Length: 214
Image (cartoon, rainbow, N blue to C red; front, side, top):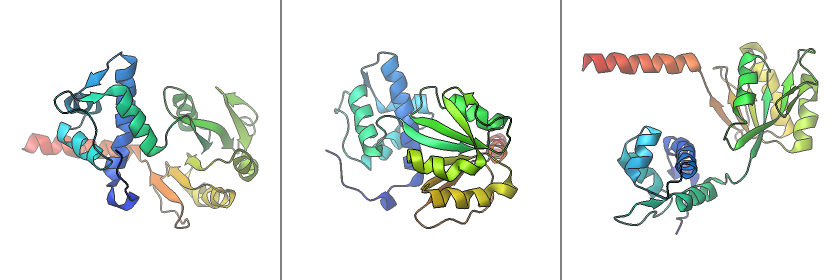
């Protein structure tokens, strides 16, 4: 039985881990594993088993006491909670080396499919990366509306980001992942996340430093 819940009561870190749990469960499924313990999920996802149990408790009671979790059943339930049945269509702005890598990566066992990419370099326009067509930057609004895309990934220089964000919001985008760590002005109903690879590397360095000092 799935509990009724409000998004505000669930920690963001828990919501992020649900994505990893889904990948781990898919991995178990592909390996032919039928029944697992929270310790198995924890080991594969790199977290503590107590964290796994607490995360799942926000959404309901899962598993069979003394036996564990049925892989397919738990995967189906999590997918139902997070509404991730099938592919989630997204757009990508900026087809440089990083943007191209993201498009190629999105075709490998992920629910996210980048169905349209945009770039201002005319040499890249009207070409395809895998199954993703690259459109001119001027067509962002029309293409996003045409395919009813709600999520966008931005992989362009910081100086151009806010201008592109304004266009995306006007086109109906409701969630943005920016690879440029700069403040963005968006309406309250638009979700924004940032990814800064070098900051993550620094974070790992700090963790290692603390470990050496313990």
